[in-house]
Image 1 (cartoon, one colour):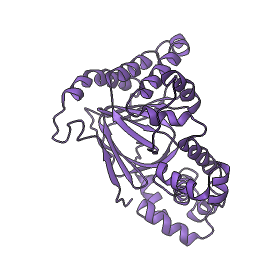
Image 2 (cartoon, rainbow, N blue to C red; image 1 turned 90 degrees about the vertical axis):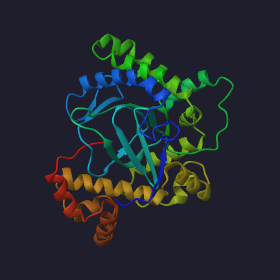
Image 3 (tube, rainbow, N blue to C red; image 1 turned 45 degrees about the vertical axis):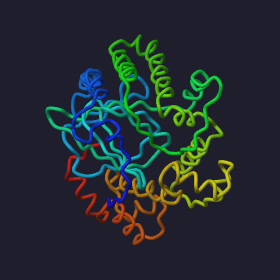
Image 4 (cartoon, rainbow, N blue to C red; image 1 turned 180 degrees about the horizontal axis):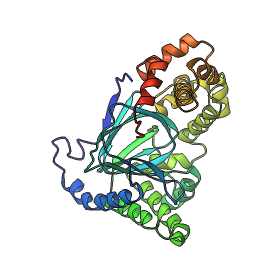
Length: 327
């Protein structure tokens, strides 16, 4: 996938540009090492594993991905315990590792690449899905006098990991062996993680996910419609009306949050679904393109080649011959 994206990274702020960790990253290392050991236990081989705590996933990959892996990421908190990763969203590129965590505030089609991993030190990460309703309930406790105003609108936020949040993630993982702990204690620890996230430097932005009238929440509602109806024709004016915004304001806010226009977002969803249909359902390019809403097979082929870097048939042949890694 061709990309001229702007790189968004905290590498300079965390003193990592020279490769030497500063005091803060050195202090967090023992805690991320403990988290890494727990992830290893629940991700025994390469892959992403849904754990017994709802919304909690562990990932392990033992080599750098040769190219970008495309997929749809739901709202979540991602913590890397070992290794590093790059994520491309629209025209933005985000780089993060064990020293910083990443939050997706809305569902996003992304291109991801694991950039640091090996057999001896695999990429290990923990993902916790975020529910706007849970965030809304805790916002009232964290910001009893109201959330301070914020003009920043984005779907992706990166902030330094702190020791307290990593320790909470460790305690959440430690609930897994005991079903009673999963039922009784895990929800309390998950609330603690959300509270610590709301009290972090990106807390004000995360809080917007829980407000029904916030621009992020409205865009999330529009995205839900697009995900459910991506094969249908879309009019920006009608989608704007659905979320009670003017067409111009909606377009501006949508692109600000997702780094994509609504039409481009829909196109990416269609291309990703067509690829899935060809790969897993064994459909040919013509059938897959029609099912996702394309009226012209040639247009589909052009846009597919431009987005994935090669023609549909050649791309699917390559994917079937490889052992694909999920980022």
